[in-house]
Length: 226
Ligand SMILES: [Zn+2]
Image 1: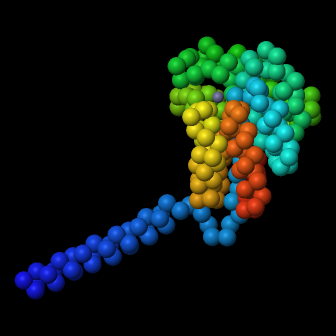
Image 2: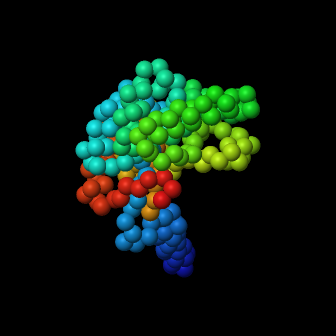
Image 3: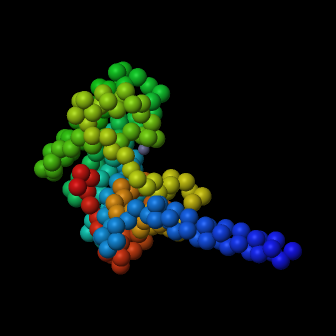
């Protein structure tokens, strides 16, 4: 009886030690940070320029940081040229198709001229107006792009721009606090983060809070291609 009792204690001990060991090893494997390295974040904002652009620009100005705005040409042409102008003065305008097209459901061949090339001409013309360097950044709406479409765009000189952390700020059921917590958890556990934001009311408030945290925690803002 005593022997059985001893065996059970040993088994329990092995389970406890094993659990602690694998928890520590597991944490280390998931931790992508380098000790003492300053964290770096690239801010990218999709579906510009729409309402809230001015508020977002105010927040970026308040914290003196630059962002890359992925723009939809149709929005610019409708009545938001002045917003695109305001973005171009201080930030980077980039290509997000002309009509926010779900590329993987369409033929790139049939849509290339208008969705990609014409949109790039709109963006280049605004960048040129403000003597900004031209860029070839492209982000596919909904992340929906086939490998063969990506290959074609890269062969034509476009640079595919993905992200590491999506804010989920398009979902009104997710609160500002939840967005900030979700993003900061990711940023604190990685050396570099390309952050995806949009232009909802929550986006503006969440980014404002996060930029204040960045200042406190000495998290640096970088541009794409750094
Ligand atoms: Zn989009």
